[in-house]
Length: 466
Ligand SMILES: [Zn+2]
Image (spheres, protein in one colour):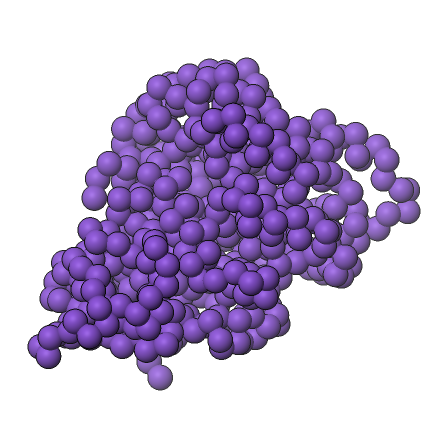
């Protein structure tokens, strides 16, 4: 089979196309419907039988038709570290995983997206490589407060910072005094501050109490070194400063479920606050991670089974708003698979292509529905990026970004089937439920059963421009 198809007939985004099925997930729930697409936009949603004979129709039958996923936490590393991951491979993996919109993180590329000049370099590096629509976060680092307005005006969707060492030298972490410079600016322009919430203090303290004989190849040492307190304390700091300055704050990749009560309290007090967690925290448990399995290393770490269940409860209670992958690959040798050294290995999990089935596998068995997934994986992240008038829902006037998937079919993750640049992932060999059959971007079928449309048709997304 060829690995691409030509775009022809009704699916070229200019002509009309109707996608219809018995399980269309709209903001008001799942129903039988026909989605009428014109010029890449959803023009009308009507009854299943509202189809004229002349129309080009994609029949989804009993498959789920959901909004294309909006993944607001992806590290692509281009330019500068393209050998880790690049726009071509990452966005192809996205298309194969039903993700139609990415918002890319400002770090791990060189330069990091912390200046206007770096943002222009980043934009230039995407040319001709995007299979899905891609937007960008800028970064807050010490000393770049004067760049924030320019980055926002140029089209960044908001700003990311680290409260602990980021792992790369060109993206320094911030402390309270830096945030006191940045937050008044962000509050004034209305930009969200996304924070990696771990503080060094509890980690330094934990390092003092490690048993002398702890093996560096044991996952337990990594878990012990990144205690929940580091996250809880950092979230306290972020919430306190966000409230003081009236700024929108967002907790990326929440792992410690202990922080949920403080999140609920701040939200109840009216704070503008959103929280994301990741598929790996909702899937894996530390008790089952074998020694040497550094493909599971990320920060904050995957925690205990009991913690995982509390994260699911947090989603159920709407304390956690969304799920993003935090796709963060590296060169395979940086994972130190031979030595299995958890302390030396790069922290980051490659998962962009499998986010949907990973979440569905765990969500389905806990009684959640595709409508919940649409909220966590599409609507809420689109709102975070300010893209909710364009992306993240099957609704009239929005881009016709769709994923057609089979919730009842299972598969085993075969790294050879992944389109990420590097295939090392903790999902390898894992049985998952939910197979992506086809992905549509602005009415164009960009992926179907292992095949991609011949030329990438994704575009750069800039804040305020459609
Ligand atoms: Zn990240």
